[in-house]
Image 1 (spheres, rainbow, N blue to C red):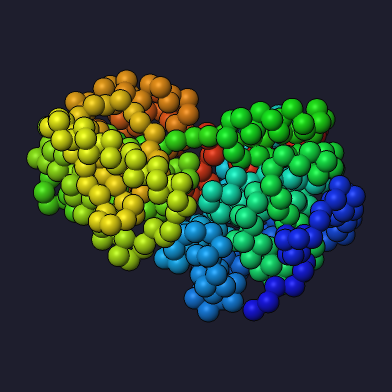
Image 2 (image 1 turned 45 degrees about the vertical axis):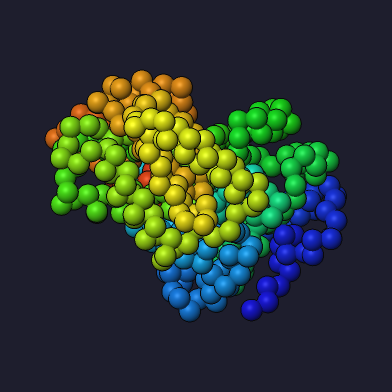
Length: 453
């Protein structure tokens, strides 16, 4: 299938963008929003995205087929990795989940349609309406595609026309999603623009920042600080900075019978989107004292990553990335040769996966692309002391623990600062209703009007 030129990102790479062209595109989006989107009901929008998500889960859907056929060359992810990532995302994007998100974040399922009240508001004879910005700009990091797709859906729920600005070379999947929406609902598609250019082009950025009512941005802390300085004061700016994640495994779940399944779930977290997302683990902290030692868990994890490579290969990486992995491996090979507290397992004749076991609990950043640390610890206190350097930067902790003790561990992790705790095996599969970095994703986009009766 050939994609028509509906979006600026569809233009040939040699086509030049100008501030005037972006300003005109934003004016068109505002006009289309007034005509096609502003008065759409929440129920109708939910139905559109529910139906679209079901199509994306179907193997014969033309846009999914194109994503899987061309995606490996365009994104660097293998076909199997893309398929798994799309399945995880679109399975969550159901009508019920969207309805639950609105009720959770805004307190009432019709909050975006009319002046309504919760029971508490009714007691005070108060009703309220939530409204989104007229024009919403998303600046996407591009390391994995799902956050950009979710941003588009959230923007439409709050009735915002949207510009999705992708990093250079990362617009492939957002473009396909935008085209699938345009084909399903052309009037909604006309309220969306997808653009792509390398960062740092200040005339283009100034034009689009000046046109937006709200800007969301995901990226490094340095990138976000730079963007914040250039966004006008009257424009709302929502930033999502660099975050890391890790896993924690309690000794009670470490036994020979359950080890293969536990290691398989951990391998799934490492393999998802090649460990490139903020929800991907850099390390697993494993308690000593179980029937299976942390070192044995690390060995089992290496076996599962080898199996995963057979069914869901990592795919090619740049020479620089491959060199970084090889250099880090060599360092730990030398250390393992001189210390029984370090062991290494590598994929043969490739950098496809790496497992490093260390008795040292000090947290270390992975070089990603399926490079994972396993750290043995006596207890949660030792693990959190080891991770103290990244306190305040942790997004997700994957947890494997018995039910009773799991609640105690989760409470301690919450007090320590983790914003999301989930079972190991689901770190890169957050529910639609999750609070991104501990913040309500939909509620941050709206402005409220209260009517005191």
